[in-house]
Length: 216
Image (cartoon, rainbow, N blue to C red):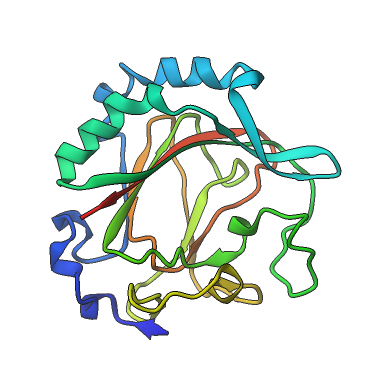
């Protein structure tokens, strides 16, 4: 369905910064805090034995995730207090450099691609916010997150209307005004996961990022 963001029934329960739009890049607002803890996360990522390959093509990884996210505890706890939410998902992902084509088409084998690279809605069944923190510098060619702007008439999944991933992926969606979230290491952004967004493949350099969802 499509919805005007201001008609979202739980919008007022979200942090004030998300009252006007479901995607907000706060830049380096939290850098002074984050830089105390991100070196330990990056050190973990530097050892391949700490990673689990989540998606691959022809034996080459597209995305890997940190097996144990305990090293992120100080950061997650900070944001729980900052926004009054409770964690129920924490991921540390590495997007590896790939040269496979983007797949905004129905003619794909879903076992061979990273489905988050499609335009999609996360379909979370409770009011939540998503928080992303880049652990590397991110530009248009290093796997930024992308959303469709403006939010006045955007695709949205109600929290009481679950559908499976094939129904929440918009395989042939043609965006009118896509916005890449880019920025230097420690760039932080907030978003409402049930609004339309997508990941991107890393084209020129790998991208590391910490993602969490907080239930409100």
